[in-house]
Image 1 (cartoon, one colour):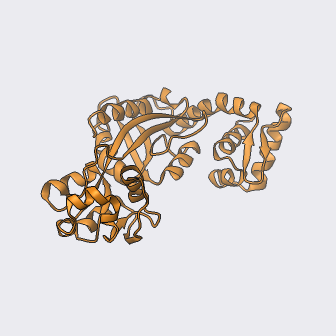
Image 2 (image 1 turned 30 degrees about the horizontal axis):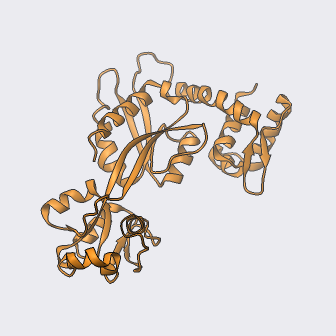
Length: 301
């Protein structure tokens, strides 16, 4: 069986679309369609059900993908690292959300990059959960950190850690809020405060409001900036209230640059998952990084 056909098949299976697979492979969509049809003729069985939006694998398609994908990934690993036995330095491609990856994962992994006999080169990229998991499935990354648990058997997810969220604002804004009023009125006591967020949909504030106040935020975002570190900087500067991961806000809280506005009995949490393509933990550098991050995350609160 032609390995090029199998590579195209696995890419379509992971991408869920001939169009996305073609872009990932650098081929035209007709070329991808032709290769899948050729493979289906060779096997005598359909591998995908064509639908209005993308494709769905048949039972035989799923079975073939689960058997072939780990071996194809291993072959890619061989071609990338070469056959020189004296060359032990592998490259680990990591992807995840910018703030968590930059503040926690990368500092942890750089401790391994210089280890004798077990070291590896490190390449990192940032993206949201959907982009990260798509890139992992397509083979662009070896290891991904995601706030979404992937579906299906081609990706394997392990809970990494829980992230506690805290509601903060500058001391100037906190002085305008009476703690007793906040306890009595809940979100109503905060509805006139400006909001700093990462997106117009207010994902962090909305999650906090739903979990703690059982309501939705009334105010729109005053400052929208797509990085939590920038959100913190704006909150410190007095732009408004913000909901931030406690690990990111902790230094500013200790310095008094921001103040925690509320202390709920059960603060909102967000879970991070460590995700690999199924079967790739057989690769030593991926397994080492995976194990190390899980060990380090035991101390991340």
